[in-house]
Image 1 (tube, rainbow, N blue to C red):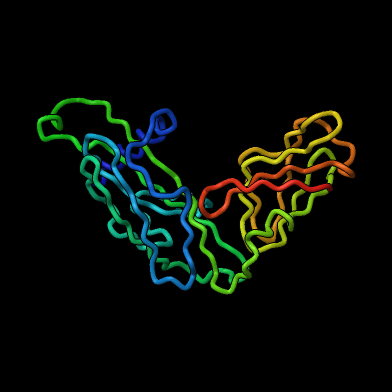
Image 2: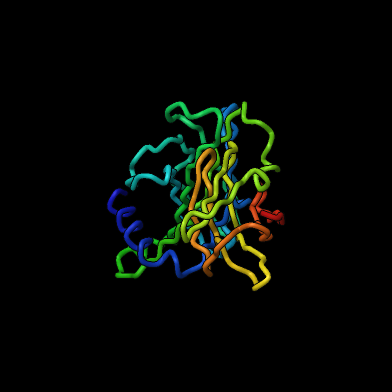
Length: 235
């Protein structure tokens, strides 16, 4: 089994970005309330063939091996999914104590490999493994109910040739797109970016900017449901 999934991961590195996944998750992100004993995730095999699926988690800061424990207990971790079948996954956080004034970010990785028949196992085949990587937002119980105000709380300042974006709140700001609407046209600030809570990021504008005063910011954030929320305001 260990050799099997070593090959599994090796093929994943080369091919996962060029093919479509048949095993999909309900939703686009996972919100894990800190007070919850566990979180259930729903997967579905949309194809007409069975797949072997492996689940892993990581914190985005280290390169976890296949048999690493990670910060979550995952049940089941490896399983077979029949065509058009569903599967429930249980996540239980077992890691270290986390900050209570901000969200913490983890990732769920689910990798699929076609289930081969016994007759096929003796022949040489190129098997493609596909992975999906989904954000897990670990949300403390005492976090202020201010997520809807995240866009308005972000502050922007010019730092040399870059835009410094400060997020004083406790929620991650997941940015689909950010632009400045000026008299000379639209300037792209960020595309598919994220600003951590109580932290800052620096964005490089698509065109030079001398001043932010009077410019109109158009910000598209992604909410818990994977939907876009659009706000505009003067800087």
